[in-house]
Amino acid sequence: MLFDAATLDMLKVGTLETLYMVSLSSLLAYVIGIPLAIILVVMDKDGIHPVPWLQRPLGIIINLIRSIPFIIFLVMMIPLTRIIAGTTLGVKGVIPPLTLASAPYVARVVESSFKEVDSGVIEAAKSMGASTMQIIMKVLLPEAKPSLLVGAALSITTILSYSAMSGFVGGGGLGDIAIRYGYNRYETDIMLVTVVILVIIVQVIQEVAMRLANKSDKRIK
Image (cartoon, rainbow, N blue to C red; front, side, top):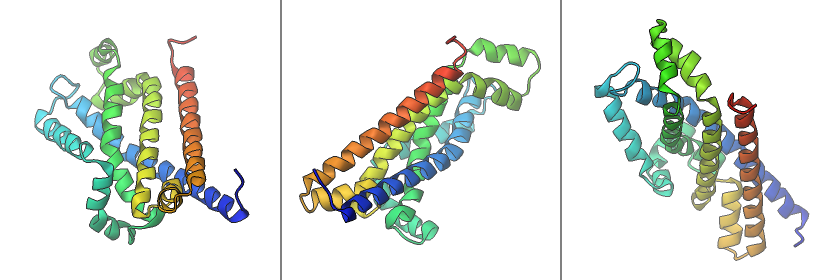
């Protein structure tokens, strides 16, 4: 399978676009998702600082957004995306819907990691007079770190799959190349190369995340 210089340049640009949109969207999704997860855990009826009237509606909203298939969410977001990014095409036009679709998913993944923290450790911190913020910063986040890193690999690979789907609406990156050439023009070799590149990216993400998780896990000597 040999490609000319133009095709190789296109694949290189597509790979860089995918890495950029996934990296930025993942960062923004975590900036939104972690606070949401903290609210879900801390303000739960059995949480550190119960506020059910806020926690329950938030959980419902998060579940509603998560239940919308990304390709439909992408179309629904077109008016808002145009306001935020000024365009609905290319990498710039994909980041807003990619971020907003991923944040609820990230929130649930992070929430799950927080709930794995031993309740005895939290109770011990409370008995020593630690404030809610101290428990979050010095107990919840550090204790959940290995699980958070594993969850990050899951979240980022999911965001990567979302970015590939954005190719159906001219979102740029490898997904766009696969749709334009592999699907519309029946150039199967280009589609296969984009799939291989995506698989390699996923494997690298998972390997790095697992190594970091094992390194930070106090149970592993």
